[in-house]
Image (cartoon, helix red, strand yellow):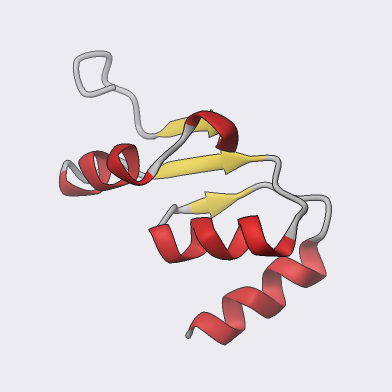
Length: 69
């Protein structure tokens, strides 16, 4: 991503893990994941520190995000 001058990584959540998020975060590269509709999986990725989550269940994601603050 750095060599390609990308401004971030947009990846299907099934291919994203904590090591990728950690590696990218250290290098100031935001990670966006898509599409997560299950609350427990949303929470996992919020805890992991992803920059953004695409979802069809916006209300649930907002509630989880507010709980994390």
